Length: 171
Image (cartoon, rainbow, N blue to C red; front, top):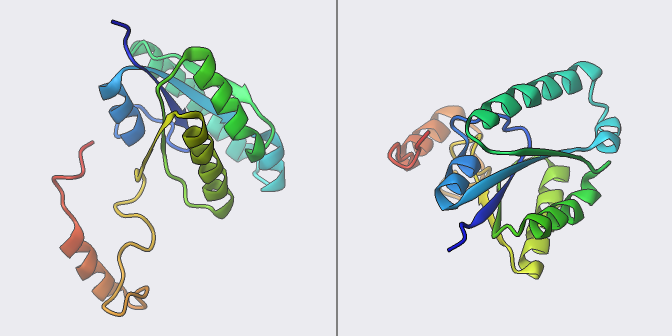
């Protein structure tokens, strides 16, 4: 019986430990990781050369860590966010992956990109597994009694603590 293959799409979460999508994908089958380079998008967002250097250096460190776990890391240059879904679908088909796994990002452009990727997965019959990873709760999920955002920190903190289940958070 062939093992399931899972594709983990890494973005700002260039770490092996405490990474929800990577951890959960590893529980489901053989994992391949991908990091997409978006040079045109970075120019549009005016990302500094220092920031890009930092990300690429972290990518090298991640490669070393993944090598120790026998998890391949594929890097692809896709220019901008519009190229993300087609590039990921090609990889999924090429490596016959069952699902795409990734941790959510919350910028407007990033949310639009991720929604297009998820829609492409659904259209192609590929599982899409998204995780809240860098935050305790999704933005907008902790609201006051009037179902609005808090304007004062202390009531927000109290509501957050009421909803926090430390048993749910597993590194």
